[in-house]
Amino acid sequence: MRFDTVIIGGGLAGLTAGLSLQKAGRSCAIVSTGQNALHFFSGTFESIEEVPERMAGLFSEAGVRLHYQNGVRLMPLGSFRPAALALDDVDIFPQPAFSRKALIVSIAGYQDFFPAFLAEGLEKQGTQCRIHLLQLPEMAQLMQSPSEMRSVQIARTMDRVWEKIVREIRLLLKDEDTVILPQVFGLQDTTVPGRIRESIPARVVFSGTLPPSVPGIRTQQQLKRRYEVLGGNYLSGDEVIQAHVHEGIVHSVVTRNLDSHYLEADHFILASGAYFSKGLRSNPTRIFEPVFDLDVEAAEDRNAWYDADFAAGQPYMQFGVRTDSALRALRQGEAFKNLYAIGSVLGATRPEFGSGAGLAIRSAFAATDQILQSSQK
Image (cartoon, rainbow, N blue to C red):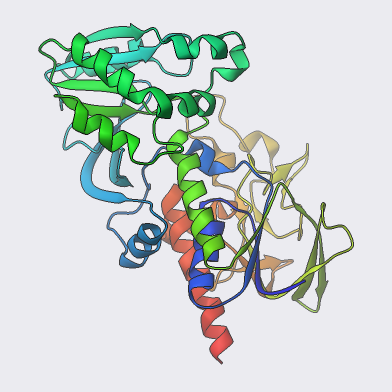
């Protein structure tokens, strides 16, 4: 099977690159192992200080609505972090003291939402908090199996019973100006968060939970649908296990599921992520990239990979594959002619692209621009 570009990785970076190329009329195949960093997505785009018009258009066409405001976002454990660009149902506040009185509504049996921590953090900012545990008969079956009481399973139920939840909250409200709910709405029906906000006579804030992230999974689904509408091929639940390379040019890759059927392309993009999605791996002596054996910028001394202080920034999170100025991946110091690396597999090797979601977006656009320009020569 032949394509203009094969993209290894179906997360934010890979989908952004695939959408850009498909929109430009190029044929792409994305190979995705399944779960990726979008399943941990907070709903805000770190290190993006302004809204790139190109990104806004691409995401809007996929139905992913964004808003922009310099400020802070509420974290799952009640702290605040600077933010600017976010999904439409993720709040950004001018300052942490955004509420006078808040009603925090939790769901009985759901263990990945922490109302007590939220209340403690908000009360430090001067907000009076009241916590209510919502008992829902619809959750009884899920509660029989603790493994089912996770964000995704709950979200499927929440999209069906949100109107009942709204009615109960309206009865519960006293003089609170804010209602805080877990971010488990809108997975299948993206209009639900907005409809909840319209139906409650107080400000509604959706607070993050432990992963998996409902906004992140929803965003991936929306981007993936748009990519496929544009004609892109998305190979889910598969992984690249081998590459055919000759004189610095990648000619094809082999995936676990396709076996002897090679994926051939003029260009290849490595958007395989970092350790969680196995884009980077380690053994007792080194950190390495498993598909192409690319050069990795990492400390040689294993003791320098981590900080004994668990709460400190961990050095290994900065490690990543090396590239040249055009994001072409390096092996033994030599750049591949048609292989680009983007997203978190870069670690902090290209600080000019930022970090987190900002790194994914910016590097994806930079690599696709290189591909499109090289094709015009």
